[in-house]
Length: 111
Image (cartoon, rainbow, N blue to C red):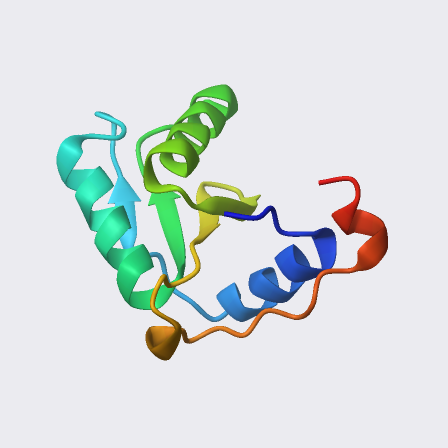
């Protein structure tokens, strides 16, 4: 998956503003069931919010978010408080719901 540039992440954060969290992560962290729920949500919606309900330590939340990115082949678009916004482009073009703005040339070279 290509890395999103800052304008694309900003666009996706704007779309996510109206969304409610679809997956909740409790004190057990990223379990098999939670991972499966995130994968299904990304497959269905492309853009989802995941909320940490029992984890208050910022470093632990960041580590779990990174693990989710790696396992689910998605990207974190942003995080606010106890909520992280994740995006994974639908693999089937006919099922895509989100049309990303074109990547800016100046940031494409960095990525």
